[in-house]
Each structure stands twice: as structure tokens, then as C-alpha cells.
Image (tube, rainbow, N blue to C red; front, top):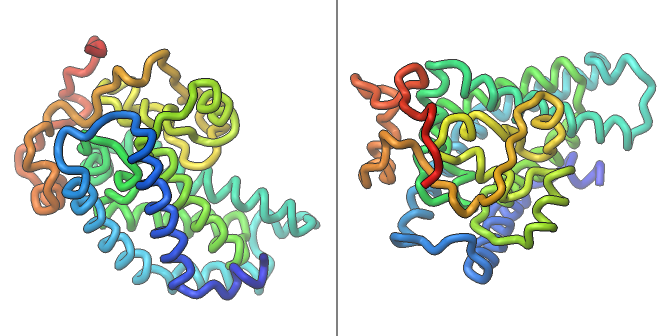
Length: 281
């Protein structure tokens, strides 16, 4: 496995991303959690455009990530190199820390920092959540996530192959926990003790702010439980997705979404929201 991820071609990584998406797309058609109000294909088309921008940003920043990883390995720099760890334990801890710093913490910070939220909220404007929603991130937000990953690599000491393995796992898990699939309640609940399940993450996409500001994890649900950001609701089918002030149909189109962070009069800020006291309908 070390050799495979150390030398994994870019087209393999693309195949993992596309293959996982297609698999979940098929399953969504078989056991959907909700029926689309509008065209499922048009919705996917919008989100896929953001995938292209993410690929551009990640490709542009790949040099930074590769060099950081090579430097930490060559100099045995980072927390994990201070201990004599067997390879399997180093890999496990690396995946955990990359998930904590590169996914959970940067996600939490974007919700709590007003100017960063302006970019992240494009992800939350989606009113029909499915596997393609995992791809809807503003290009600037993609930059935030790359920098968080860089910090994790340098501080922890993560070899290149572990980063490639993590990114492959992270991409699939993000698609899985956004997927519009209806799992048996007992299965979803059981999964949520270890990994982020679809019902667990759907709470995060609620229009109700106390729920929006919860369940930040991507792979391991332990982070939300450990830091007190885990929220569970009895009936996730009652969730209304999106942000109240961005329900207009134009906000499901690429152009208006790209402009949202720079709109002169921002319709939604956390200080001005009327979410508090709202209840599910």
C-alpha cells in the first residue's frame, strides 16, 4: 500500500473521485432520502463546475504540499518523528490528525470567522443535499483547506503516501456523508459512533443555525463528540436545507454563487440572522 500511494498516478486519484461519485449517484437513485424538486442533473452540473475550480486550486498548490511532506520526511521533523512508531500506528495517527486539522478545525474556524464564512456559505446555500454537494466549495475556500493541510503536515510529520491515502479516503467520505441515501436508522446511528454518517452530516446543512453550527467532522465523528459540537435530532427528514436568505433560484447557479462573498449588501451574517428561536416546520 505504501508503494501504491507513494506513486499513485493522478488519473488513479481522479478515478477514485469519479468512481465513488458514480457509485453513490446510483445508490441515491435506488434508496433516495428525498425526491428532487427540480432537475437532479442540473443540480449536479452546478456542483461539478466547483469541482473543476477545486482541482485547479489543488493542482496549483500541490507543489507546496509535496515539498512540505518531503521536507518533514527528510528531516524527520514533526510530532510523530519524536516517537518511535510502527508504520501502521504512524499511518493511523497521521490520518486522524489530518482529519482533525485539515477538515474539522478549518471547518469550525470558517463557521466562527465572519470573513471566512462568506466563502464557506456557498456550500451551505445548496437546498438539495446529495453526493455532489461535497464538491461545492468556493475556490478561495479550497485555498483555506490546502493551508490547513499544510499546517497538519508540517506540525505532525506526515509522509507523502499517507497524505495521498488520506485525501482519497477524505474525498470518498465527504461524498458519502453528503449522499442523498436512506440508511436504516440503526445502521446510520451505529456508523455515527465511528465515522460521519449521512444523517449525522445532514444536520449540519439545516437552515436552523444551532444545527448548522454542529457536526463539522468529515471522516471521524469522534471530533464532534470530543469537542462538544455533536448534535443529533430524532427525525432528520424534517430538516430544511440551505440558508433562509438565499432561497432564490439564482443562487443555485454558478455565476451568482461565485459572487456571493463580494456582494455589497450581504443578505446573511451570523450577527443579523433571525435563526434563533426558529423551529423545524
